[in-house]
Image (cartoon, rainbow, N blue to C red; front, top):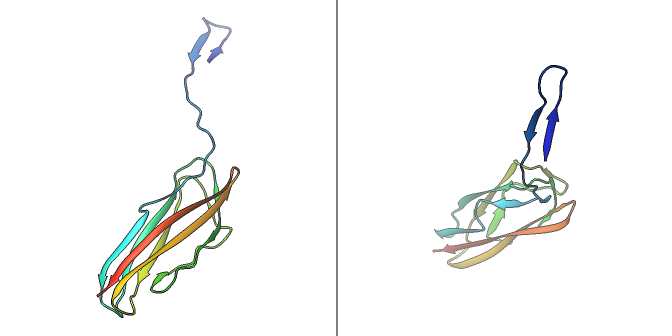
Length: 130
């Protein structure tokens, strides 16, 4: 497209415009899709942080999260209704405290809504007590 600016003195200025539209999209992107806590002695704790950023161009609203089973824990709750606008993020502080030796696996789901519907991001968690 073009914009023409005309005035009473001199020739009109014509500005040519170029661009590409982006469809509306909220995208909650984690800094990692899986967390391996490694080997942790039973009764001791390891901590990991995962940042989830809205890299889209549409606001997102947290619809809910899954509960983590022992020995995994999310230290701070992510509340339903929390807005995550484009360019912002939230950080999960996840812990692993094995009660005994062995391999443990789990997953954490964050579900959000936007103008286009409902979406879910899943983090896979692993750790070994030893």
